[in-house]
Amino acid sequence: MKPFSTPRLLRSEYDMTLLWTIFALLAIGVVMVYSASIASAEADRHTGYRSTYFFIRQLVYVAAALVAGFAAFQVRIEQWQKYAPLLFGMGLAGLILVLIPGLGKEVNGSRRWLSLVVLNLQPSEFMKFFVVLYAADYTVRKAAFMHSFKKGFVPMFIVMFLVGFLLLREPDFGALAVMTAIAAAILFLGGLNWRLFVVLMAVLSVGFVLLVVLSPYRFNRLIWFWNPWADPFGKGYQLTHALIAFGRGGWFGVGLGGSVEKQLYLPEAHTDFLMAVIAEELGFIGVIATIALFVFLVWRAFSIGNRAASMERYFSALTAQGIGVWFAVQTVVNMGVNMGMLPTKGLTLPLLSYGGSGIVANVLALAVLLRIDFESRQMMRGRAP
Image (cartoon, rainbow, N blue to C red; front, side, top):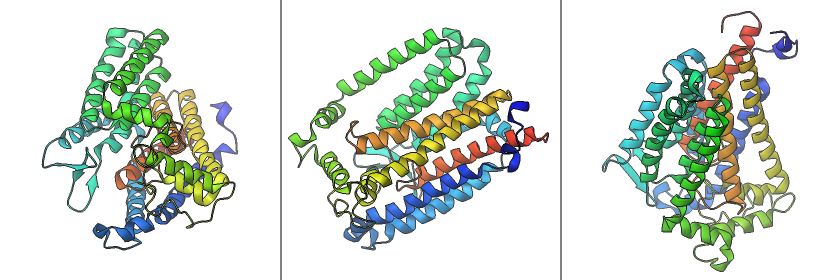
């Protein structure tokens, strides 16, 4: 593969820049989760009124994620492809289990967690990773039928319809939106007939509109998103305080630890609305730096995918690009919600927000991305991956 056989690319067996970007995001997440959670931890009896409660747990989550990521990196990509349908089936089982009374744990009206004594597992976070693998494997297996509505499109549509049904039962509309984007993007990148893709986009658009309009809960969220200041102490409370945090941050922020909004004013400050705390404490510069890290991560995912495709490693290519789509969509949605550009959704900021399942699932996916790049470099050296 002459175009890629450059001394610069082959200088290392690993993409160290990408690896350090991942470490940087994880480190920023740990620091900001600690900063954002101090007040809520001290005020909650379930945490023992300990200011370091969420910080210590986040450190444990990151450590567990790194161990899981290291193990995942050791697995060859052909093995991930082989077991993609099985992993997808396990993910479906997890989505079903959370709906069973006594097994699923309900928090704030949503049943998304499996209580495993010492920790809570959120199957929908891992399902995003499994959807990437399954959609990539499906597209490669059905490559000859990507022009066919019956053989190429319908089977995947049925499977994703089942996933969507289970997610809406939780409910987890945000995860459904991300998984739908992943599956649709992989099918398109894998050669789905453009007419079928246009039809798919039209059907999905109508479907999402109906899901919002026919659900009073979601429709009210949309109404208050348009004008949160109409009820700043009620329906628009969370968004107005997020916007206040962005406004207070200015160019350089009020300083690490100096946020006022995290003092029990902004709900979910260490999870869904962590970006607002980053904006308040680190300012516009901190927000731009965080965005830049995510942009680089997504760009590398697509670059790694393009290289794999040029080497006719199509499952690897679609998996890498699917991971890029996942991180891009979830990051944009989370930041859009924090900035008041999108209606409030329960989506965390990848690698940064507090939560064990999300962190582990994110690092697993990125470990596979690094493995894809590693195998491409090995093949370019003339070695077996």
